[in-house]
Length: 195
Image (cartoon, rainbow, N blue to C red; front, side, top):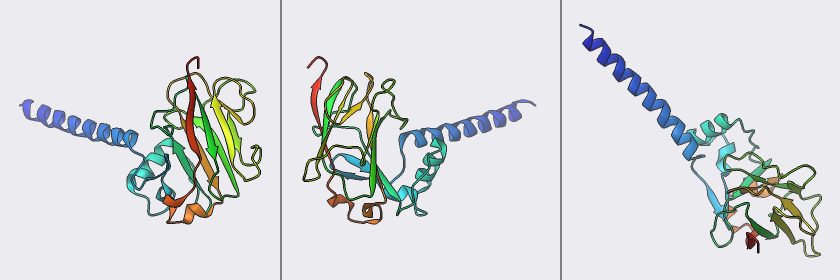
């Protein structure tokens, strides 16, 4: 007598639990479709528009992220250096070149979930276009390291993997369809461990 209701209850429990777990795993595995890669930097230009796919909308809602409008800005992330190796806190890197045209830009290091990293009190954990030292041709170098460096230094903690987040504000690149032709900074490893 109780066998049929128990089987139905168990089946519904498995179905609901499986559905919830599969939705959560998809949200953790992907930030959506439509990613573009430009010289090792990844951006999701459609994620902040009305045309964004449901996974991108759900991922952003779950993370509680405020998105820029398509004319306001565009966020790029880099998780690897120029040789394709993962960025790690035990290595030092030199980010060199120039950014695409933008009224302003910001740069910071973040963990795998996108949360900004802190390296310690009074250490430079973020850079922006207003405070960066440049050459006369507009190019720059930013040293990303756990140890103090001369010039433009972005401090990172001595942790595992991290990503660099470059946000272009008020940029024509956000509304452009030719994003693959952008000139992005190059990230080179300059030493690991005690090097």
